[in-house]
Image (cartoon, rainbow, N blue to C red):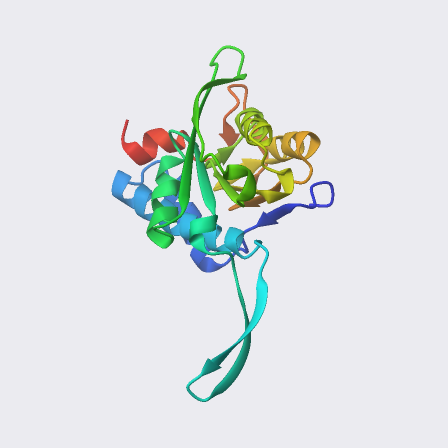
Length: 215
């Protein structure tokens, strides 16, 4: 998107369309929803990791030299989940990188005002020195994501070290992020057209956390 240059949208393939179809279908079983969203999350995390700074290295294969690169060790990366829906994404991150550092932020949207309320946070003490994968499956108004980025910035994390990973978003949320934190990079599965009067993404997929956790 020209006005949000730091946004990476997962490349659409038949596989990604099928996964989106599964999680958007209101008739999908919880098992189908969980399985498809986990697979989609892994694709998004791989895309986000590819944005991290890399080091050019040459290694020896059994048959000769290979010029490649190395990403930061997983012990140096921090994954921060915006509770509770992002915990499903965090599970996939930890399956991929068991030694990743973990942070938690609890932000709830006031159902009357739609404004974010920070209720809890627990971050690694050295988070300012780590690249951060900020996780939240849905980016609607952008209020929760902006509040989380503000908290990370207050903890000393440079905005350019934050990669916000989400499954689904709308342009309104992306613009809110770009306005508040233009250096934060966003990796998303898809950009939907609009929000409805209740600030839900349309066509969207409903409440991600409720569908994932069966509540």
